[in-house]
Image (tube, rainbow, N blue to C red; front, side):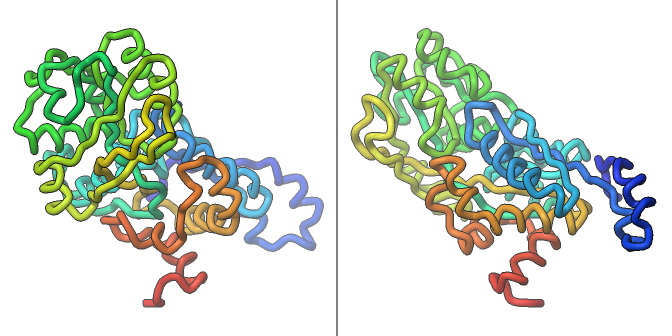
Length: 330
């Protein structure tokens, strides 16, 4: 059953006036609305949703689709919103996509969400730990007994941080205080000395990290110990990542960490044509899309449709990729 689709009758009089030239399909055409779940307004997920909607809405005269992309709680919240029908599409970390489709992690109690569908991968997202320079934090192990924002429930950073905590044998009691601030709140909390460190799964450069490093002397913390390497070896959706030096004030050296990728997902019963037109809009305007955020600059079409995708491709997305010759016809 298709959900969250609304009708518009603004074309009725024009269709009647030009009935001899309009096909029955045109007369029955309805404007369709899609909502894309994103993340905090300072994060790249929000930019992803806004960018896709910007391109989709530019082509409304051709495909009759309207798009909006509100700020949400992040990856887990987006998948739950897709599942409940509140959202048609959503941005989610590749590990969260995997866990939802397979009924693992935070989705274990609900079981496998087999109707989840992948659309494409977007940018890489390393787990980024930023600590005040006066906190004494230089390694992952140093987070113990410190005031750490581990992320708000439902966010991708909270999900990944909990994986790291499990690998380290930590609980929230390991920290002097485990805060649960949303992404938009943590830079100010670091600057105000309310926390010693913040975690963020995000593409770079990022506005929140930029804000924090320019308002307080702070350092990016490497995540490259034995436990992290074990996670990379065990899970196919994780990979080592490097945050280039010089992106942020006071951080001139490359920092090794690990992470996931942002992916765009939907559910199986979202209209094939809607997904097709959304995908077509992005890839037919790919150079424009890549200019909408620095994290998009190095995107590659083939990698976007083949990496970080645990759920099956949505039929609408698959149709477009086959038309472009990017997939073998089945």
